[in-house]
Amino acid sequence: MTTGHVFIATSLDGFVARSDHALDWLMKQNTGEGDHGFAAFMDSVDGLVMGAGSFRTVLGFGEWPYTKPVVVMSSRLTEADIPQHLADKVRISPLAPEALMQGLNAAGWTRAYVDGGRLVQSFLRAGLIAEITLTLIPILIGSGIRLFGDLPADLDLDLISAEPFGEGLLKTHYRVRRG
Amino acid sequence: MTTGHVFIATSLDGFVARSDHALDWLMKQNTGEGDHGFAAFMDSVDGLVMGAGSFRTVLGFGEWPYTKPVVVMSSRLTEADIPQHLADKVRISPLAPEALMQGLNAAGWTRAYVDGGRLVQSFLRAGLIAEITLTLIPILIGSGIRLFGDLPADLDLDLISAEPFGEGLLKTHYRVRRG
Image (cartoon, rainbow over all chains, first blue to last red; front, side, top):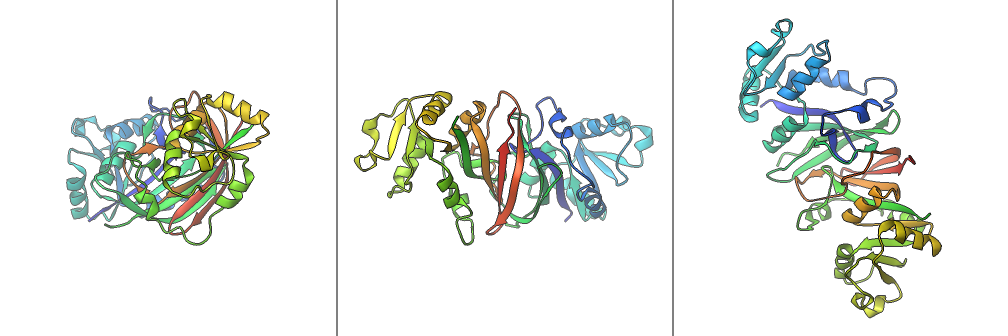
């Protein structure tokens, strides 16, 4: 089965964004030189899975940043919502996480980059996440959109590495232990 | 002014305990050899500040584990609630965090160990926490009692150190940046 892989940053109090989706607290950080493994991570996945919210955010960047195929999980969007220049890069899927991953598996994907707080939560609940690379940003913002949510059962993790970088950022890498 | 210091562990998803206060997920961890700096931390503080809930929990341990003075913040408990053998070690204070810390300052305390999720939240809100030593436990438990809560404003942190220990635990040490 295709495995899900997370590469994300949160405030030390666990938020991926403020309640209004603002990322000012993240953007102001001094991350130092280099990309801290992001290019290598992107190389390691067969494509990305994201929600409609993340898709809209990335569209807002202007230039499309991904060379790998992207699946947008949405029951509301249709292929008509994909700008023409992205038609060969992005597709919409109304499937739930388990069925989607079965489909990606059949399509030859080994590893999927699962992005966005809500998606990470649903994939974790479905037991579809194998690894989490979580960068802890040295700030408490008090409220916002959480990375982690309810789970049907505990998920034990193995710490693979922990590596400070930039001005107080801490990149942690965990593997989800199979139950 | 006396500064507040936190030394605590949470699940990777930010909980100090399950909703029913259970710590089974924490107790099952393999923490390896040594005390990972706890004795040195205790040596560095003049005493402890805890809430009534933590006080009851510690009383339940049977043997009283602290040699330093303990202040229990409670508007309901009275000196009569302190077992006689602890009369010279524990006192009750109905004061709010700011007033309590002013009193501790007048009593010569430089550094106070602030313990318990709810207390840490109120001291953070009042700007009374100077340092946080947070051990991340390699598990997601999905729900429970959070360490961090709402804040009147962002709190920027400096990462002092990050040190893995035991089987996948990660001790992080942050200093709260003065605004």
